[in-house]
Image (cartoon, rainbow, N blue to C red):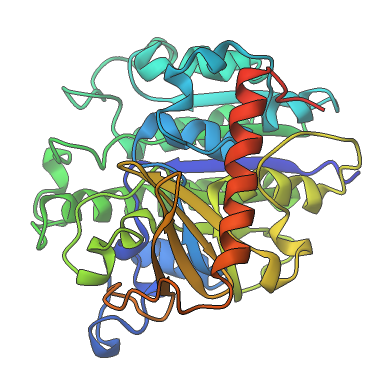
Length: 375
């Protein structure tokens, strides 16, 4: 096994729509997006043609990204199954001698993140309490958390104090309702078409400064970075307002020692992050997860699943299948970006997709109720 550090950035509401580099065809190729720093970072990273979140809330993002558990019917953290025996990236790598830490600039205990981090093997937790003890109290945004720019700098500094190899995750907060940014940036990041756009610009700048600081650290070259969002948010393009478009999240993998700059023609989802990272590290022991190792799975075998208002959406074989738990309601070609042509009953792959989706749902429900979330 290669003992590389693993750093996961979960960026609040950072939907794929806001990122220019992932939308080169939008607005007839004229769309610039709101993320110049992340665009530059994508030029050195591995991304995927289709990439999705597994839920629509912050509390769905944590289990999907860090423990390979999707959201079906209700948020996993709020179900009795959250008391089950399970682990995550931190717990698995902790067993291999990694030091692990979770960072979130909100009030400690907020949204159950601290309890979830502890349960899944994070050895340390750095919240607003730890930040203010170290840095003072004037970086609180007045509503949610420490502003992203200072908190991400603190994150980079604290990793410098950890013993390698380490695994950390940070959950940012500034790109969240009520959509305010620090006073000194009001001129630099004016209002966009939507209220969130100025916050996305601010957070993008904060991410850029984080990588600038991290790149000077001795641990940087020996690290795998993953950047994704917890979920998506407000949209001003029709494509991102469809049932599927509302789940379009970036999944960006950056390895400074092997900068790639490639978009792979595969379907990716948050629950693939854990298996993909373990694959990159050459981890050989059994572990449990609902996703797949994207870099070692052929394109035709990649897939994604999510759940919205009673409907399961299953993406595979170039189609999106919508299933209500009993029967298929719709099938759309992935090329039908506005989901206007329902092909139910007209696609030869429909039967196979139904069987595969039923198997995924059955696995999920049985493992949850029987507490079988470990090998």
